[in-house]
Length: 108
Length: 116
Image 1 (cartoon, rainbow over the protein chains, first blue to last red):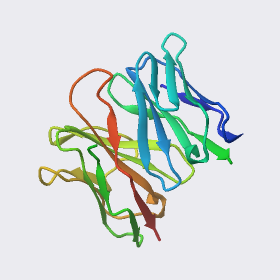
Image 2: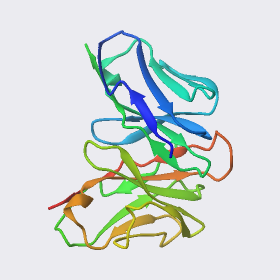
Image 3: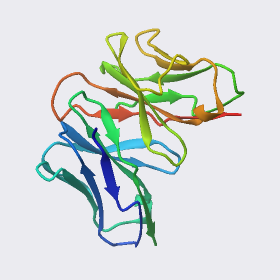
Image 4: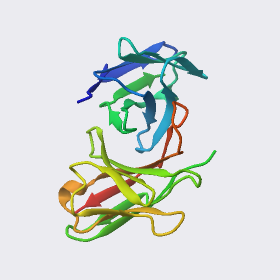
């Protein structure tokens, strides 16, 4: 059974800080998603990656398939980045297995 | 950018009542999913749907749940006799056909179901 572990569970930082959220999984996957969930509850897909690194604005996602690990980085963090960030892995059956999420609060 | 649309955004229902949650997936997507998230917990998979039939379902998706694609655009989740523990946020997602890392999921904004 594939487990998805995220760390930290909660993260509070000051505006402008560099943020790193980590995700580890236990078995082989076909892709990994990083998603953002705002207080209203809606889920937005940020990245889907199966190798290397992707960048979108101030967000960077990396994945190391050999180590079964991915990181989400936020540069120059801003209060509007405050949200829950969820890692979800896609197994060979195209099912998503979800992490518990990391609650990020950026203080002004 | 194409969106997955869910209605209603919030529904309150009496225990034992039937509810239908509606989703309009992206028009050229062929795979459809329902997930739920009980407050404070992880998102959980309920069911996947392809080619007008269920392709996979979780243990949560028991006889009280059903899905339907009644026309070419809507994808519905029905809960026949709601229980208090069905209170959750329900997310619909769709995915284009094809294989490879470029075929991601698009999620709806969710329906918050409150059973009282």
